[in-house]
Length: 591
Image (cartoon, rainbow, N blue to C red):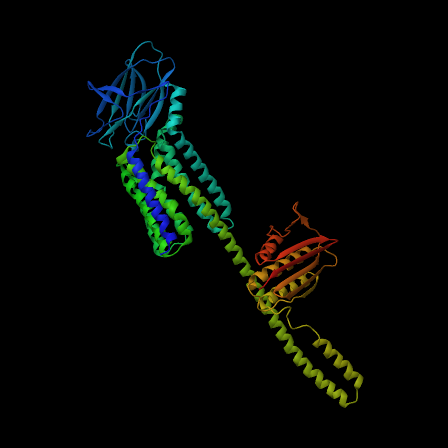
């Protein structure tokens, strides 16, 4: 087994162990900055409690009442958060804020979505009493009561930005990146079907971005749309692995059984998501309850994806799978870390923070590799186009050879009659008539029916094809090539591209010229092949760097493709336009 295929998984396993060790040992005691006070000490049913607090084993809609005293300043706000629980906030017995009461949200949600808000405090002197009345969720047997922040709106916002600003920025970047990839995919797929890979990568970014955006508490403060954020958060979480699996099946060139496994995982996620939506719409089970299934299925699908890539990399030597192994395994690792933090570690970080790190690693690497994939697809398409053109040229050459053979048969038949007539004329002593008939026969035999411009069959067919095109266009085509049948290390197909592109450019350039001509010569000596071409032209377009722009309809690679090919084989090229004649010369080493 190649050490290069074993080393990355071992390094990744070590990295996972370090990250989990750090996560288990990390305990942060983050205090609000000056100007912001955290109200964590409250009274509930006569007992002192500290927030955050989780109260369990509660029947649905159990009332809970918290009270606290406060010394507000002028212009102070309260930052409050309630998770799937109705809330009423009173200040000195006056209702100040109300959320989640029946009729204020769609019935199919069962419980009100999570809500975060900045609530302005009334101007008051001295001490005021805060009273928060909760009702426990219907879909959960427990309720989590979160701390309340007090301070000016600017100070509280700065505190929230310090805690969750990265998540909000990251979500916007992901959504924007996904939309950009959609546009790129829309353009690329018009020319190459492989561009659909960019669509799946973009959809993955959008799903993760929506999830993070919906989970971020700062979003709820800035955007008063808790229902929309609720749907974004859960649907983004439920579906984010689907485009990832589709992307892998399309880009990585996996084995059939591997593709079937990933398609099966994607189908499982699609079915689970559909069932969760139906249960939510019917009011049977909210997303907040069915998400526990996805806490298993989504990380599992990413882990399966990583295992498939590891098998493809190690056993099948799949180069694309090897490129994606580390970022995909990192994504799966951070997904497990995210779930571990939700159930075990309870680190004081924004939800989805760990997964954001994994997505960042994956998106950067996947974007680069996907760019290479699309580039390779375009190159393959160009090669297929070149092969198709060669097939058409060979078909045309075959037709010309058939016509030449038919012409030979006609000549043999004509010569037979001419010789018979000459014999009769000679017997009859009509020497002048016999001589005239003999001259006619010699003229017919002098026609060039060999159909051969060089010894290399494929290059010969290419040159004859464009020679016929030039003559049909009214140009004088004088082509004589010295190209051997054995072209050494240079493939015949690449020589066809060089000769064919030169002649095609010349035929196009001759359009509109009064007396068009094309003259091509080549010489092969000591393994060095030199090709020159002179042709008339009506116009040329020269760039600022001295190169010439293609004048073909729809554009083209022009002479740069020829220059790149000859340089590949240790050669060079020179192109010059002067006094109505375009001079082209290239050389390359055959062996």
